[in-house]
Image (cartoon, rainbow over all chains, first blue to last red; front, top):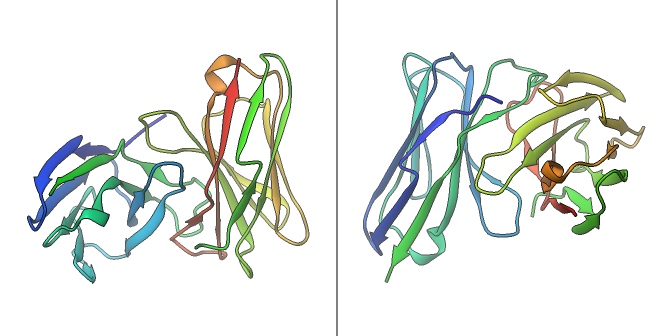
Length: 113
Length: 112
């Protein structure tokens, strides 16, 4: 099935550094979502974006909905050990969600103390 | 804690068998969707249920079927299991028209 192009695939950073990851698609999406998944758990919703150009923050996390509606990025400032995990972008075409979320393959964030 | 609970958490089945996975949605959420997540991949949409009817489906064969009950809980049934069906199966609930979904912890299915 289709997946979004998410990069980088993995990141090895030092604690305290800022992190940036992005997601692109050949198709337009009306909603972009960012999730974090820890081992053995389901994805947890971090940020939801509903309008092209929208910039939204959740604590140290900031995400933007691209103007073309074909991309989104997520930034994490001043990373801490609990930020370790896999981050997924997801796009939704329709308001009702009947065509489901389309996910990227994930960015694996590893933090070295 | 999303309020979405799935059972069982782990399951081992033999190729050719049938399996039923269960999901209780977050209180007040009337829409349930199911996803399959293979190792190292993002979740793939299987189908969505709203008001006990399937109202959206991804690229999965008919041997993947589901039910939604009046209390909005849901089941995923997979017949004639294949080795490639081994994956984490995730249930997500949301309100009608909402554009964010909340996931359960998943059921890890292993087919041998």
